[in-house]
Length: 82
Image (tube, rainbow, N blue to C red):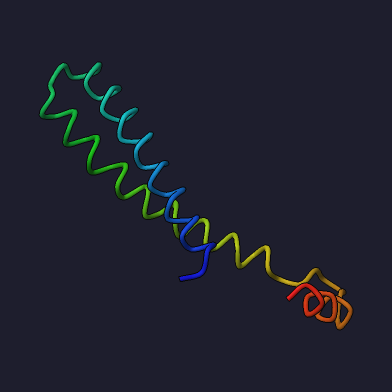
């Protein structure tokens, strides 16, 4: 597994942890119910974490595109870094 994928998964996991904590706290303060707050805190952030992972992947593809008008010089420079 390439290192970048591992780093993306670690970032996704830490993001999920923060999101779960914040989601539970806000839902509990609003409802006063541990059960309801737990449900809200588990469902919404998990879906959001998956969306975040794919969002990161999409941005990597966008950033990997050659700049407009760069032509062969950009490809030659990329080969030099490989």
